[in-house]
Length: 217
Image (cartoon, rainbow, N blue to C red; front, top):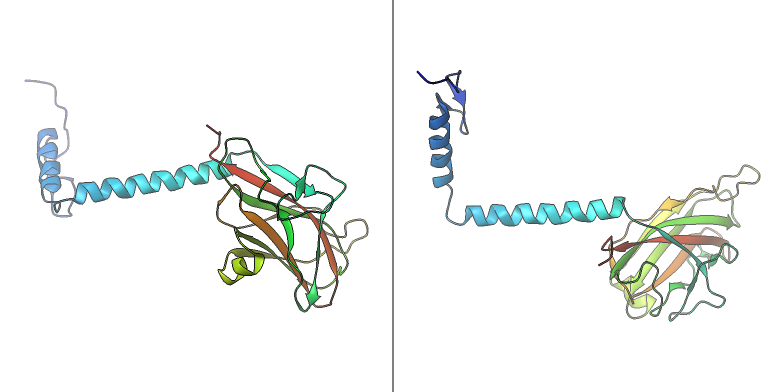
């Protein structure tokens, strides 16, 4: 008599009322389940699995990536706006309890990430100074190929809210704040606006970007 390889009887397999009494029986009944799938179900299942794998890869690249930080070019424009520095932050001025003027923070000729990466997202913002240290602020990132007004109308923007840390020497909190936005193609423009309850309050910041794919091809 050969060595027993299936010591249990009545092992559940698939549907609640299906049990198996041997290894061969398990194989047969799994095949029965597979044969009972509707036509094309295996193709649909594979498509779903592929979609899940793609999304997991995006999450993986977002979590294990490089980050590049940017200050403002002297006189930033919608063609060139960024420069690697720690002395010239971008400056967004508030409206009177509404959004202030949109300022360019990325131009069409700028690449905020690595060569050969094709898309990016603004990952974090570091606020280094602000006038109003008591009241809340809204800050939004806008992206698009046309004007900032077109992009806003199309819903191509994402926002955060911040409140200053009012302890001396720590006016803006000193900690980067995450930004949520979709991946954008290199060559799109970006703008920022700020909102405070008082007109012409100023908020200064640097921002950091992630690039995709990572590693670049």
